[in-house]
Length: 449
Image 1 (cartoon, rainbow, N blue to C red):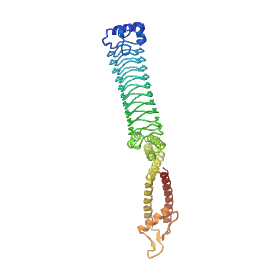
Image 2 (spheres, rainbow, N blue to C red; image 1 turned 180 degrees about the vertical axis):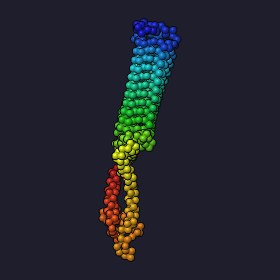
Image 3 (cartoon, one colour; image 1 turned 60 degrees about the vertical axis):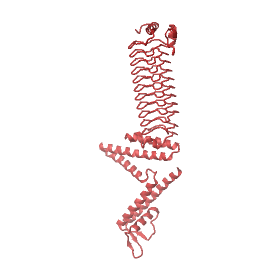
Image 4 (tube, helix red, strand yellow; image 1 turned 120 degrees about the horizontal axis):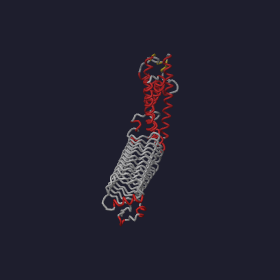
């Protein structure tokens, strides 16, 4: 059929081919610009009595073989294409509005910009199809197969996609606003900047998907699997993720506020940490910390804060090694110092979150300074038969403990003598004041929480 054929003649010729009532077998045919809407059929007096589909009112193409057909800008609105073979068709900007496509196979088709609004298409196959900027508004597509499809800019607003399979699909900027995606399979899909506002994703699988910059405002995610998903820069404000699987998900730059979730759901670490991207992991833990503070989960916020600080230390270690390998000695020194300082603070007080570690530091320093006093022989018993330098562990530890915890040297019958011993006494006293202040600060924070 030549594209120069007048539209009415083109339609009449096609109607003549299907008038016999048997399934159409027109593989590779040319239906470009075919006008076969209800109005066009009515103009040709092609009603139910003359062969129009009694269920849809459009072309009766159930079980037709139109594989590899050309149908650019054709109008197949309301056609009955149930179980039709449309594999590999080229149908850019084709209209299928209100058509029946149940169990039809459109795998590997080029349907960019096509209009599928309001179709009835349970179990339809679009595997590997090109559907950029196509429209599926209000479509009924339960258990549809769109695995590996190209869906950039496609509009599924209000569509029923229960159980649909989008595995491995490329769907940048795709619109799923108010769609029903319960139990849908969206694993390993590229859903960057996708719009899921108001959508239902109960028990949906999004494991490993790229959801960077996606919008989940008002979405329902009860029981969804987001394991390993990239939720960086994603809007997750005031969502209930408490029943979701979030193992090793990524949250760097995500908008989290009032979002219900727990530490246990993360599987011990965010995805950035598992991948060794420590700078991004630090940002991810910061987002989680701020979220848990917003819902009053202080223990979870403390966990995220400590993990974030640790990621900063790991990142400094990476930078120090890189600078060393590049013979950037100044950079190696700078990053190495930061790593060392963070490691010391972690050991001392777990970044200001652990009272027990500060108590451990107290006990250790008391023993260390007691040993130093014994080495210098600078602690003197003032009176009694034991007058003179003492090496008794009890004397040394008693003096060290009291000196650590009081502002002035203790008066317990022992006197430090010599420059070295007096210097040690002063240093220990100063360290004791610092540790006491740190202990009080951490204790106050814990009591406030």
